[in-house]
Image (cartoon, rainbow, N blue to C red; front, side, top):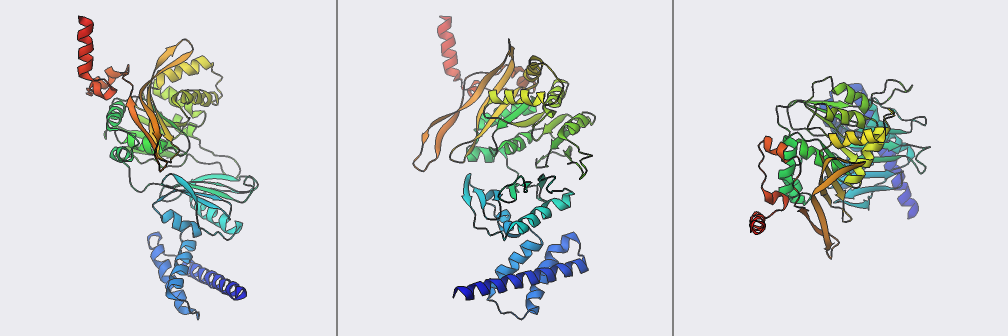
Length: 438
């Protein structure tokens, strides 16, 4: 019985490979237009099945046809995961183990990759159209799929247990602030406050850990930028979704095989200053470009935004200090710290909680220096009060009652935010004033 099943699997694999090679040869001969390739491929697969003298049940034929289509057009066994809208991230830890993130939780996927050779074919299919290269001398690569999904791949010798692929899927729907409110990531009052900050051209840093939702928040906040302003976005792999008309999107370029002609984020930041930008948005500061970003913020490019990896607003300041030191300019720490304090107005802290939910856990004002210390004040802060029976975090985002020192900038832009936005009950405030007056 076991031998019979093994024989059937072997015959099935041979048939699958035969049809793949037949269809690929025909595609090479016909060379259909890119927009017709998918349709022609499906037609050729149907014709190939009609031409072979093998009887398969209809469900088996449909399944094999889809697998063949995914192999030729898509990313093979990973394609169903890419097509699944409930999957937000795909993590391949070698050919024998594939994990996915669904609803903020990691789980093992039922995906069979036939071996290291098939995994390498998937990686090559991703990076070849982008002109990127991976081999033993250059075993790591960043790339993106046609839909904007972000991809990182690592191959041996750096990946010990087989090639690794991490795909952060691109959301097909442009999330709005109302979606974040519905998800519980932010409150209406916070959204109103952040809208005022963006329109009033405050410089904003979004801080958070990996997978905490920094890019999503950056996309949502950028939607508040007025449509008549010129925006320049700078990213390693383009994934920001600007909704304005006047946008210039810049993306880094990896070095050639010989190691030359690389274009870094720092190169793009410097060049962007010659492009008459009104807003500069860097997808993520992760190196010496941080010093160029701060200098741009301090020299007339107000309203700029970026993200950094950090676990708290205070850590974000330290992280920016470290990144500035990576620029190799040999600046004293106090000079760097002073640059940060004068350039950054607001730090929005984003966290992924233990139950998988993503929330803005604090909004802090950077209000200057006192001695050697950067002064910060929390305007909003998330307070956890417990955990429900089903493991969900219970808590709420509350204003601290502190009004930011940059209120005059918000008012100059036409935003008259009431005391309730900052957690001050107006009637109590009047009552307290009257008592003090008596």
